[in-house]
Length: 432
Ligand SMILES: NC(=O)c1ccc[n+]([C@@H]2O[C@H](COP(=O)([O-])OP(=O)(O)OC[C@H]3O[C@@H](n4cnc5c(N)ncnc54)[C@H](O)[C@@H]3O)[C@@H](O)[C@H]2O)c1
Ligand SMILES: *[C@@H]1O[C@H](CO)[C@@H](O)[C@H](O)[C@H]1NC(C)=O
Ligand SMILES: *[C@@H]1O[C@H](CO)[C@@H](O)[C@H](O)[C@H]1NC(C)=O
Image 1 (cartoon, protein in one colour):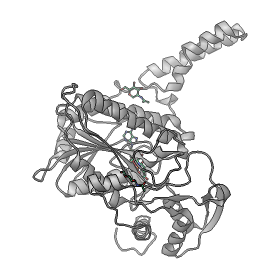
Image 2: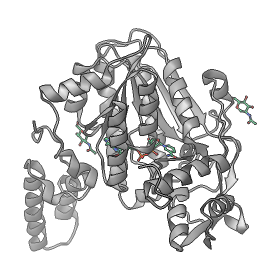
Image 3: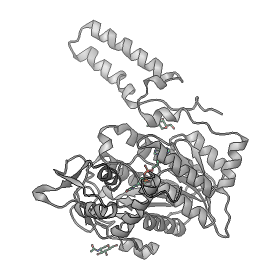
């Protein structure tokens, strides 16, 4: 079953070609009539295209293009959805995991499934990074019994359908456009997934009966230009240094609104640089590994006055424990049928490792594990979104979630490298 008709296909940039602009051109500028009418002509063509259902030729944003190609629905599909979301343990929960084919989503889904919870994945498999890796994670999930629905979180019709088929008790919302630098290349993908997608998801959650409790991924990047360390939840978060950070901060405010108006139980988790097996190829530890093995030089950033750039690297298994603890301690939403019945839980936690490591040390550890010397190219940290230092104060998560990270960078990278060599078949041919 195809859902071409209810696909929103209105890229913002086309809208701007319309009214206010043209009026101003007409009344306030000295452009010739010819220019004016050519613009009108061009405008009509654009309007024609973005209104027509087959608008794909004009759409360049991959996340949006793929939105119109999903297939979902039908009895066989519903059966798979139900079976994947079926709770198998006493006191188990049924969780919709968005971004399930992503790095964190895969690990969280597997952990939930293994302890007997019902898990349904949702992912749009966009091409922000190698799709083959997302497909390989999906295969892993299939083997664990988790079905990943292919679809977009901004597709309200699909979300409504999922909640009709399964009365989810929890949503683990991990789908997002991640990455700091990519925001300058494709800003609208951040608005699409991290703002519009989040709102679409919360709209459906607030109307669902029962309303689920929602745990979602914010980011340490909300601390932005904040210089007070370690970062505590109460510190200021009003100086984001990237559009990515700004959309995560906006997400926290949107969460506040849905909690306040509709009684949705909402927990935001500020992850600090998560790494590990099945990780993200756009992150430094991952492409450093690739480039060191290739003999390619790697950029190592330093701050002003040769200041150290350091990250509070957090191992994936520790993050997974934090996510599960957040789900397990989440109180029920209080509303029903879109109406608030009483105050609901609203929380924000740092999930970090509390020991920042200079990026140059990360490289040294990788060199030892890979037994290859890195070609280091020391460069000044560009002012395009990355901050110089992150360090989490995790005492709140420790107290409320029992969160206690146990894997240091040395040990975590060892596990990552082992996975990497095996996955790309570069190590000894042992496991598949
Ligand atoms: N990995 C980190 O270091 C880190 C740090 C801070 C915050 N986070 C946040 O944690 C969450 C998970 O991150 P990750 O590292 O697993 O990233 P990821 O990119 O591997 O996973 C995100 C998944 O969401 C999917 N997705 C994106 N937009 C979608 C949409 N509109 N509809 C449906 N699916 C969509 C992607 O295909 C991808 O598989 C994200 O919200 C991210 O912003 C991650
Ligand atoms: C998200 O979906 C809504 C409707 O559900 C649509 O109006 C909007 O244009 C979509 N936003 C993006 C950025 O795709
Ligand atoms: C860490 O955060 C807690 C509040 O959760 C605060 O009481 C404590 O002072 C903070 N510690 C530091 C070193 O900032």
